[in-house]
Length: 617
Image (cartoon, rainbow, N blue to C red; front, side):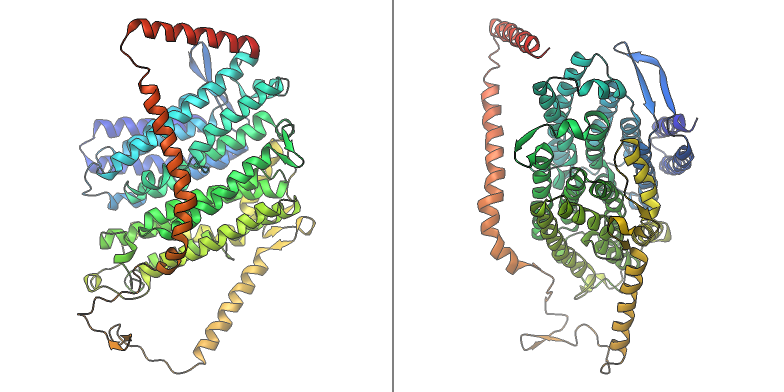
């Protein structure tokens, strides 16, 4: 019953919203009630692992089936939670927005597709859900119009490519093993020839890496996620990209198995997992430092979203119990603080009409709730205690060092340094510095928009001080895959695994803040002045002086780094684009319009396919 309701409720909401597509109040109310009740049924599923449901019809002669596992429960809780909060925040934000008539409909379709993907018990169901998710993402990105159209089409090209690669991988498994079911494939996977196994691994990992935005397959994310409405940016950045990470976890541990993957050794200790780890390390560094060059708050955070995926992936492929737990835990932590940050940015946009960092500043007293939420969020993003981002990053750092991956650990630290630099720019340019005159009458957003911010603020702190809440489910995920489990406690990790007590860390951190505040109070006498009672370069400021030191915050750093960025990153990206364009131009010439030529193509393709299948199978 609970599993069926996870699908029936969103579908019912879609139908109702389609019927009343022109009645905004009904669409909003339906979406809010449906997503709220879905959260309730999701919680009921926690005690029903192993529950399986087979649909009463078949596709291509195969039954579509769903199954409840600890892994998909972990993700479904995140999906249902963020969907509800996104709808709640959107109730006021979307009012009056152009091109938003189908906003809630595509949101519910996207959610249904993600539920189908994670609860799927076979690759045919997985593929159908993957397509529903991809197409609904495309249309959801287009909500808002303008630049959103162009960026949505960029995503569409990547999504189609990922789907074609995925279909190829699934076809090979079906032809070799004769089944789409996960359990059957998992049993037969280890018995496949090494060549076919490696080919299958590459196809699946590349396909899922496109969805997960792993470098260099990440270029679609910044524009695609930053151009739609900001609540959708938070929804997509918070959970959508993590469907690729979910698929990687499922395939590596639930289908292929670590022992099979580790058979592919390149040289010495460098195996297939390490190669994936190298790409994850690059993903941690390049997008994170690219965020420094952004002057739009949404785009800055979407670049960080790519980088944070690198932390998840490097922890997962580390192979250790602590690293895998850290990678899985980081997915949840990232969801809480990045959604929190983007909701706070949306709150600022709602009142000021912009997310341009060079046009903001000084809003700390005008929107204190958004400031507190953003502060908590960036502390989590930077991996600083006592927020939850510190815990999962600590797991990952320690796992990489203990597993003998010092260069990957160094990459993680370098990525964190870049994160700290850019999030300081984010909070400074929005809330600190000089308040532009045009924002004198700005005020905090209504309570219904504040509520999601408060909920996520509490969650970010809660999972930081009490990581055992999440670790209890993560441990069951590891057990279900036959992996070692990290000995955890409510406040962290037991001594046998490294001794991390977040209650002690949090109290120490809080104590330091109290001491610093006391020192501040005991210091020199303070005098509050208005912002124009100030001077710069020997000149006093007044309302007629267009002075804002937030503008181009890291201009000096950009001046130093820009040549390297152009020589290395930009040239690499341009080379890939040129290669794609040249390939496309060459393939275009194959379409001659001559029927005889096409017949030769078909015959040649048939012969080549027959030869390859004969060698493979």
